[in-house]
Image 1: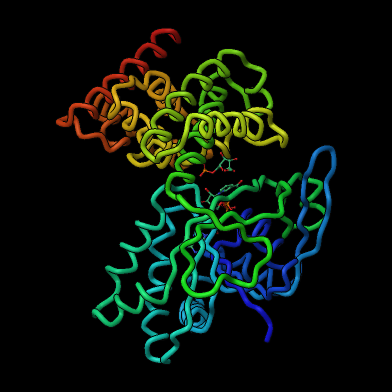
Image 2: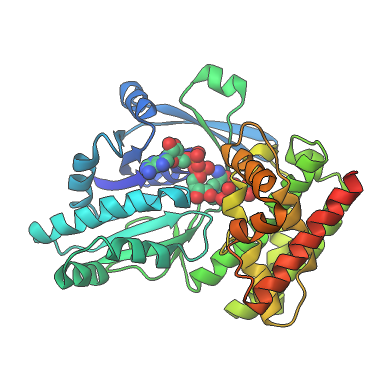
Length: 397
Ligand SMILES: NC(=O)C1=CN([C@@H]2O[C@H](COP(=O)(O)OP(=O)(O)OC[C@H]3O[C@@H](n4cnc5c(N)ncnc54)[C@H](O)[C@@H]3O)[C@@H](O)[C@H]2O)C=CC1
Ligand SMILES: O=P(O)(O)OC[C@H]1O[C@](O)(CO)[C@@H](O)[C@@H]1O
């Protein structure tokens, strides 16, 4: 029987990274996406072009052998398919997690009805620490009985993954060749948690790892923090692309220090050695600071309120530093720059700037960052971010 995988989120990662490797492993792909118009176009065309950028070269590949569904319009059909599947990959931003919980909880009910006791493993490719905890909570609150909750615990694996390939906006030339194309960096591995339910999937590109919460923190709270900080300061200085930021010494110095703070907090909290954390720093400076692929600041700093939220890349590691007596000065300074992120095409950036204007920065910081000023360390962090924000403003004037 043909192997099948559902990919929820047919964007840059879903179509550019996951479909590439599952396609090569002989899987039929079932895309699910919220963008109904694109879903229909994908079905009509029956294929799309994937551009894969490596060092000094761009390879081209045609992806076919798929079908696509709209998550809202085709909800019932999607649930029916999930009720009969063994593997799903999710490549979405966290704001879309509740809609996946809707699909999965309904599919669990249908699996019970159909007496399907085969394991289902759902792999989450998202830059979000604690994704599995969040998803388990969202799914459990949608289940009604103990039977459903037990079925979920025993038969459904919620597995975190590290997204190790990047997806960027295709160039105008690529789009002229195929308006449905996607553009991605290269890589032939899917790094996933080892807490699989049942047998490991028949997927040669999967590498199974332990300590996924900590590994995600190493990636997002350190690596993606670097990427976002360089973009936030770059935007402040009027740059448009990552490559401009990487020539700027001031940005490099801030990032270097902020990374050390994040590495310290994460390493201590999640039990990684100093060598492992040094290796982490080297890796992300190679991958993100060295800018192997030209990327838009607008993508890297996008959605600033999510990135400034309580369990994301600034507040998360900064509170871990404070917990262990280290002052996260440069993480706070980086967060202050992101609070200044302004981009008229980014609806969240607009919302954030409006909020700061209307409520004032003093009230906006705890609201955006989820900081409780009655808790000592959270109050200290609030003050550090506020003071940095003000000091950057003074320089401007
Ligand atoms: N692009 C990149 O280089 C990387 C992205 N990531 C992470 O991968 C995830 C996906 O990112 P991208 O593919 O870049 O984003 P994207 O914006 O290219 O794709 C997201 C897709 O999800 C769809 N969508 C939105 N809500 C949905 C819903 N409720 N159900 C189904 N589809 C829905 C959108 O229509 C869009 O096609 C994010 O969590 C991101 O942080 C991680 C590492 C690299
Ligand atoms: O908006 P997010 O979650 O940070 O996703 C964008 C990030 O993901 C990456 O594409 C890879 O992790 C980075 O290039 C970028 O910093």
